[in-house]
Length: 470
Image (cartoon, rainbow, N blue to C red; front, side, top):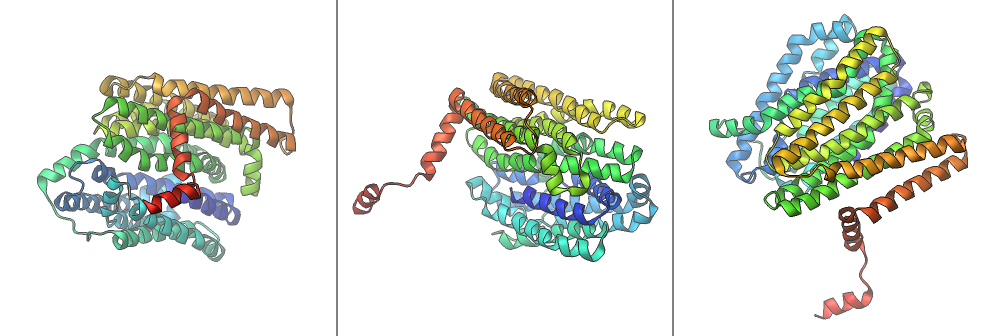
């Protein structure tokens, strides 16, 4: 949550200080670093969590070697392709900025993966603290940098500073030193686990940045900036939920990976929770999307509808994250690769829209189509390979979709003004109704809520006294 919250704050600060064109350049730099970071990320931290050998020092050192090697390769690729990338995205005079981006994957290769080992025992502090410190530090620096530079260079400094802080803090929080060591058999094991995820990462880049690349190639930089604002508002909250859900859900599902009944119960809780949170997000954007945009990004009035449509695709992506975690908990990384590949099915429509210079809303439609197909493939994979019935995913999704559609129809029929108190009242009622319906109709979700309530419930003084006496 800290990661996406800080990311959103930085985005808001930069959007207020930078011109739309410079914000478009910042979006192009973000696309480039995302592309080449994919080459250095094989979910090796997740492998440390999932593997039975995750606590073995030799295994950890081998994984560290793989991480470092991938970081160096990614940095070298940026240096090689800096000139053509600058001409494709934003102009030849940005070549040096892209060269400087090579520092980011290199420093990511220096991250100490020992922090993931603690997550095997549900101790998330070593993993969370470095991320929180790097995010908060760069967020605090965003305003001075934007004020000082006033252009895309502020974003470049933030990228490099964040990578440096992450590498430093993970090594500070780790119990074991950063000691990469080549081990051929263990390297093969890492490649077998992370290879499909590496390919899936590049596929996912096409999924989630493909639209932005088409816009960068066929539209103006200010329009790229507008699309980036809408995409940030759509992705930031749900990406935070998906990452937290994965960090908590993967160890919990891995712990019962051999017990199908308990595995299905926990997966159902996970999927239902993701659907309900996505439903909440869609309801908020349905009733208050434009107001949120105007409040956070005064220069970008009119982007609310685009942000709402983009969030519809992100809700499906959040649910697909639950299917990926479930498959990964049982050592299956191919499911993610297949579903991500099918997510590209929406890209041809996006390319057609770009060629015809259509409305940016059609890019949101193409994303929703692609995510729908990808989710179907992921659910089919869970059923065929792991015995997870499709209804465990599609029933809560259908309920959530129905709630959003009904709320939208009510809003249109009633005709409440977007800035009226009645509009906020309708939003509150819709949110309450969604929470109540999920709690009543889904036993797994209800059990999870009751367990959470009991965990935080304060014991009466008499019970505490009796416990102390005993």
